[in-house]
Amino acid sequence: MALNIWRFASPQVIYPIAGRMIPGFMLAAAVLALAGLYIGFFVAPTDFQQGESYRIIFIHVPAAWMSMLIYVVMAFWCAIGMIMRTRLSFMMALALAPTGALMTFIALWTGALWGKPAWGTWWVWDARLTSELILLFLYIGFLSLHAAIDDVRRADRAAGLLALVGVINVPIIYFSVQWWNTLHQGASVSLTRAPSMASTMLAGMLIMVLSAWMYSIAASLMRLRIIILEREADADWVQEQIVPIAQGAKP
Amino acid sequence: MNWGSAAEFFAMGGYADYVWGAYGITVLVIVAELLSLARRKRTCLRRISRRVTLQESER
Image 1: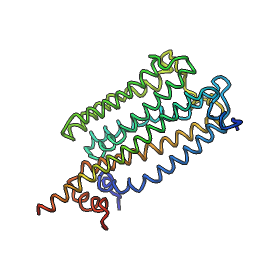
Image 2: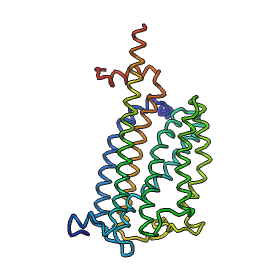
Image 3: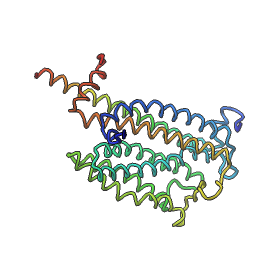
Image 4: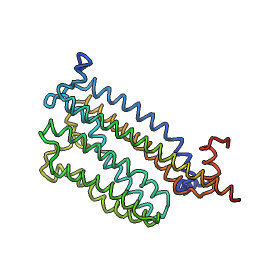
């Protein structure tokens, strides 16, 4: 007996599954954030060069990583939507975009507040900072383009195409510190060599990265459920199952 | 333990504005996202239930 995976491409099937997953991811995000911040503020030592200002790293790096990862996942779902013509894929992409934009904003904001004490300037047009700013514009462009087209199917495809073209920016962000001479420092963490930071700093940062993952999944699933409701408003399963529960009636 | 007192903790070695400015806005943005999600869901459910009521009254 083969499990029919196409079942999971149905909004009606995903809606309750997503609903059951959200509390777990939110709880994990909160617990990991508490643990990560405890290590970040109370266990990790003061940096010998930057003093306490480096503690911005515990949100800056997780947010910056998520901003790139969410974009790739969003573009992946757009590609699947275009190839397989599954409605849910575009809903996934649309659910991820605002959280991705938010992570990009946090990365830029915390970067500015870290840049001032570390480099003496809030902002510089170097390759890393500029390409991350372009990422924010790509998220905003994706959402604006989608909102500007009334026909949902056409909006999905047009915004999806924009998302796919924009993927080229992600490796540019990632490798910008190698390809160009940037004020932004190179990677402190890589797969090929030992990280250039104290192990407690690294532990705090990685736990915060996990927390950012959990939060992003939870927030995106919450938005996915809303998008499903908005798009399936006329469907029988929404009107017969979801609305009575929302109105407080017994099912 | 890095801090002798709570005041020392909040002073962040002279970098309080930068560190707490970064953390403060992050918390604010996350709270804003969650609130806007809750509001969007409420609006959506209200609109659908109004439509259902309308359809029932037409029957």
